[in-house]
View 1 (cartoon, rainbow, N blue to C red):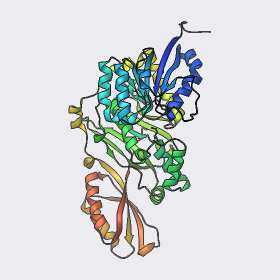
View 2 (view 1 turned 120 degrees about the vertical axis):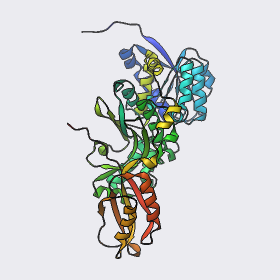
View 3 (view 1 turned 135 degrees about the horizontal axis):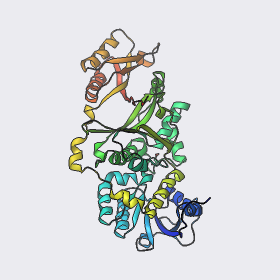
View 4 (view 1 turned 180 degrees about the horizontal axis):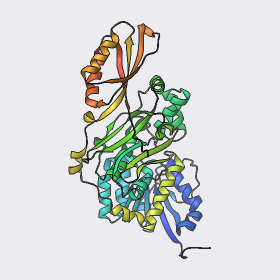
Length: 446
Ligand code: HSE
């Protein structure tokens, strides 16, 4: 039985700016899947041109003759190209190209999270002015259709929280350090070789990439114009194997989490930091380059989206889905209904990190002598910090010191910050204390 109405195929010409890893994936998908996409959607995707400053290097995809060019005007001035795909990356040239694509009357598809996080509001305005859209599914969560889930599938919900593992590189590094005891640099080099990391991996490991994604996801989930300055960010650069191991002994797994929470008054807290989470939480089992985002909605409860968050083909999957959605005319409609609370109102609704409450993992290197526990406990007590657990193995290390791990009850960040300053000054402790937040992700249980 055949269901449906026969419609003539519609040709959709796509201009691709940026022929790097993701660009190659997108070209490959369009070239190899044109037939099946046409069968499913009635749209025949065709690459009009591919623009890159490097037209010489070998790529893992073979383009039809003469469509590779270093002249962006070929894309901009070609009126048969309806959709411009910006995969240049970075913020300067990419922004210029997106604005020019919109001014030339093209819909824009992009995976450029840095650009949207930094200049999204200006670009969205340009799209609205031109009656066009910007589709950005590939910007967050690689192949996971998380933007579409928030914008359409969950639209009936008041979203109150999201907890995301949104950087594949960091998740790969932390997973390797946890499961194989590998060193940080070794694991980072592997993530780079596998094509998960950004051109400059600093943005991955310092939490910047996760913050870009959180800015985008939180904007659409909470309906606020969010900027990067609203997000408190710590990366994984100084995470050690020892802390991962001690946390493990206490029942926790370390993940770099992007967290957005909204309270009853509409106040939002936005953070990216290494987080110890309970070993039995589903996010704890997300390993390697995989991403996952757990969302709490007023009607749906908890939903979790999981998949490959980085790499050529997963991200290309999201980009090509956007191309199809734009060509069908769906994106322009959803985009028109993207209503964000303006900056003037949002600013007042961002919670300061000092007021945020969390439990903490603290590690100090203590002198193995009488009276030491009393001294560091007093500092914590003086700042209203209550200890809920502690770990000290027998035996001492260099200079008769011993690592002590303390788990606290919930306390405001500002109390902990003040206590850490005092702990660092105690003569019975060596070096600076290590401080990692413990994130208690709520459980949606019957
Ligand atoms: N460098 C990013 C990551 C790629 O590791 O997740 C996907 O945005």
